[in-house]
Amino acid sequence: MKQSFVVNLCRQSAVATLALSLSLSLARAQEASPTNPAPSAVVSLTLDALVAEALEKNPELKFYEAEILAAKGGRKTAGAWANPEVSGGVGQKRVTGGGLSAEGVAWSASIVQPFEWPGRIGLRKAIANHDIELAELGYARFKLALAARVRTLGYGLFAAQEKSAAAGEVAERFKALREVLVQRDPAGLTPLLETRVIEATELNAQRKASDAALETQSALLELNQLRGVATETRLAVGQTLLAFRPVESVAGLVATARTNSYEVRLRAVELAQQGFRVDLAKNERYPALSIGPSYSQDNAGDRERIIGVSVSVPLPLWNRNSGNIEAAKARQMQAETSFYITQREAERLATQAALTYQAKLRDMSKWRPDSVQHFKEAAELADRHYRLGAVPIATFVELQKQYLDAVEGLLDTKKEALEAAAQIELLTGLTPPLASTATEEKK
Image 1 (cartoon, rainbow, N blue to C red):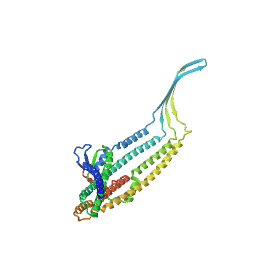
Image 2: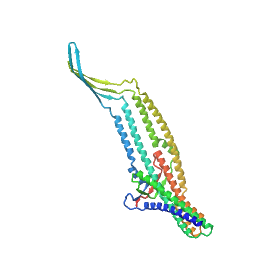
Image 3: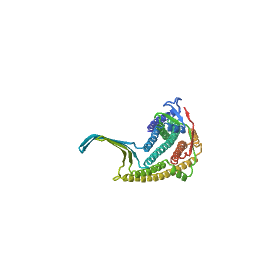
Image 4: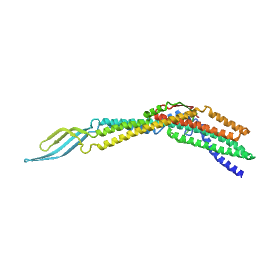
């Protein structure tokens, strides 16, 4: 019965070990690559280099650039005059009566230029100018969001690599120890239970290593998409150190977000634009005027020529554009409500991001710079002394777990602080309260 149980556990360990070996081989392949920057090569870049590459090659940037061009094209159309209108007619004219009769050709032609009611073209230009401003704000917001996302993904990739390496190290340590213990004939209950504890902890460490490898692959796929490179392109983020700075008061950030947030600025431009739309709808109650020269001639009997000025204007009897005016005012009310809600939302998000950032900074301030290294050394020391019988199984297992938890905790805390800093930048437009340094190298 004991042998069957041991065999089953060994099989489970072998399966988990195979998954771990695959994840470790992927990590090793990312660390060692030829100098030729082919798609199969692994390039190690800094966070700043990743951001610069994404801002240069991201394919979605062309969409926002085209949106700006389209808005500028609409500005040209809004300021253009309407084309002149040419009209004419020709026919046969017969004159009878008084004993005389005559017939001949009669024809007429006119060309008129439509003139908009004063101020109408200016209002259309103002609306088009706001379209350009909206497109430019959308472009700037996307670039800022793209940089923040790439920076967060890049650090997430680095953190996943570090967690995968630490989990793999612990798993290999438990695996080596288990292989030694399984070969022995456990005498008594305590050695048998210790073996089971080691086997279970090994499986858990292998699972963490596999999860970190999957997290690495997920971040890599999204980074490649944002960078505009092939999906299979491999990448490693070099040693990354983040230096976080304290932020100003929460009240100051909230006040800045109330005016500087891209969402608030977009809603403000839309509100101003809707005010011009209301004015335009009121202006369109008055008709456009068409004026131009006209000429007519008939050759029935005597030749008769008429040169004059043609004027045409629609009579605003049935349609005073009241429906469009009411619709524009309703849209203006919606824009006002949207602006107010967006302001409140920006205040809430800014407060939440600032509090999160401050909380993560407080957590990191409790860590010593070499805390992870100390936990790593303690885990290695516990491994050696457990083999010598100087450390109990509980201390040995707990130190291995705490080493993994310390690595994960510190990396996750920094990642969450980085995300909060990116949110603050998006909401306030201020420089993010961090500085990153890393070694850029190609292996």
